[in-house]
Structures are given as structure tokens and as C-alpha cells.
Length: 462
Image (spheres, rainbow, N blue to C red):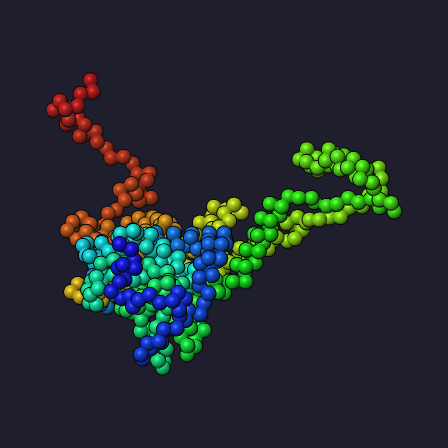
């Protein structure tokens, strides 16, 4: 069963393809004023650099695990969101404090239908593939759109989650303020009205506010980087043309008044083919015994400045999408620079994006489950390899503080403590350490003890 069959309860009927002006009583369908289809076809699918940036970022985004929790302490929960809610951790101390507070605020839920749904959103995708598609659409079109299949029941629990093509989504808003969407329309030759409660429209902020509702659509990064992307595409096409069109590089001509006869020209051409053209003559200087001129028919990519233009456009596109250039061009960097760039990318791009999706998912999905208490979806950024380095340093530092009990160490790391074992609440002193003033102390006289043991027969040195 395809997606449109699942949408059949919301289908209004087949309308002319490309019809964007459908009247509704008390409402209006707003055109998608961005050329998002062009972003998909020529931006993502037709530009190698844009494809590399978006596919890399989307795959990395999908590696973040997300877990379901039960809120057990409202005060700690509010403090946790204040410490790390925006996704922009200020200091390492703030991160450590946030993890510690989260342990008190949230309790992991072991079993719930929402957990199963996130693992397998629909029959064709796993959780990682769904997140990769959702974030990929947001990077390309400015918005990631998902639809919850509730089995045709307005108040039903979600049975499936489907990622919709954002370039084919039209937003329906209410007159006269055009501030809040009242519904969505999937327009791909088949028009389907979708309830706003069933649709997640996760978008970038769009400052192009207008009473026609253009601001309701996410601002695509490619809209800001369109000129740079076009520049890169033209440079790639020019380079490819130069590689494919390996024709004559120039023309030799006689400078005399009478020129050359056909026979003379053919003989000269044979000699050029033998002594000038071909790989065996690369770098060879050829001489002529007559006064000849030369017309240059082609220029190298260096002469045209293509390599410089391609490098600069690649750097600009990386800046548009928030991906460090080093990640896409690791050959010109050290391992330390690459690791630092990956950590910066995760901290400044992936984590803030995930925090935005986290808030939207909690506002959209959680209310669909009526009798589950106060649930909260939370990504675990500590599982990312780029965040493990700080954790390793923190563990090594805590291991040197022997004054702390094992439970205090676990609590400081934000991990679950062991309250059932009393030994976890004891302070352990390193046994290998002795005071400096006892280092040269004389050994104790044990001759009396040895004599007694000898008399009893336990020690026999004879």
C-alpha cells in the first residue's frame, strides 16, 4: 500500500496538475513562493558540492539516538532545559551540570508504543533513514515535513510516520492575519488536504514576512547560496567541457603573402603529428624552419581561474550550510584539525538542529498519546564519538579525586548511582601511596618473633 492510499481519507479529488489556487471558505491556499523544486533538481541532484554537504550533514544528524523519558521532577526538568535547552552549551561545566540535572529530572521509559514507532516509522524505513530524509529535506527546501498516519481517526494514536516531499507542500492559512497555518496540502498531481494536527512542518526561520503568507515557509539555505551554487555549477560544466572537447589546441598559419599550398600544408601537418602532437611529445619544444604564426584556440583551467573559483565557491557553500570546509577536504588538513572541525560541526550545527526537532516532536507527537503521563523525547548527544573525548577527560580527572565515593563520581557524570551497595558510598584511599617522611624509615625488628616461630617448628633455617 503506497502513501497516497494511506492518505485516501483526506483526498479531495484529482485536480489539474500545478493548480495552486484552490479557494476555501474562510481560508486560502498560499503558494510556495520559493523555487524549491529547482533546489531539489538542480541544487541537490545537479551540484556535486551541494550533494556532498547535505548528504554528509543528514547522515550525521541521523546517528544521534533519541530516547523516551518520564518527567519525574518538574523543578529539575526546568533547570535542565534552561542549561541545555537551546542546544548551545556555553561551557563544559554547564554541560556536566545539565547531564547531572537530567538524571534527576527524567526517568527512562523502557517500553512504549512511541519507542517502537521511532524505531520503525513506516514499513519502508527505519528510524535513522526517516531522520536522514527529514533533515535532508530541511537542508534542501528549508523545511522537513512529516505526516502521522492515525488510521483515519482524528484522535487516534499514530500508526506510522511518513516523510513528505516539502517542495510539494502548500500551506493553508486563515485570513486575515496569515500568522498560523490551519492545514497543509500535498500537491503532486494529486491534491490531498492534511490536518495541521497530523503534520510536522519543521522549518528554518523566514524573515521575509508578508500578508500573503510567504513567511510561513522555511527559508531554504540554497536561496541565500543560489548565486554561489550557480557559479560552482558553471565552473564544473566548463571543466567537463574542456576535458571532453580535446580537439585542436590552435592553428598554425604561414606568414608569407602567398601562404602555403595544400600539399605544403599536408606535409606540415604530418610533421606536426609526428614531432609535436601526442603524449610522447609532452613538454617537447618543436622548431620550424620557416616564419610561422600561431593562434591559440583554448586556455587551461588555470588560465581561466576555474580552480580558484571552484575552491572559493566550495568554501562559501560550506559556510551557507554550516559545515566546516576541512570535513569535505581532509587531504589539506591534519588529523587534529579534522577532529576539531568535526567536534565544532557537531556542537554548533547538529546539536542545535536536534534541539529544535526535539521541541517540535515533543509538541507534536506526545499529545497524540492520551494516557501516558508526562513524556519527553530527548536525544543523547553523549553517544556521539565527537563528544567522547570530553567525557574521557572528565572520567580521568575524576579518577584522581580519591576523596569522592564511587556513587559521587557516577552522580557527577550524570550516570545512575548504585544505592543498594553500601560499598559504593565509601571513600577509597590509594594503597600504593605512603607519606614522604616514612619513605626511609628503619625496618621493624622481628628477631624475637622469628625465634618463637623457630622454637615451635614453623620456621627452620637450620
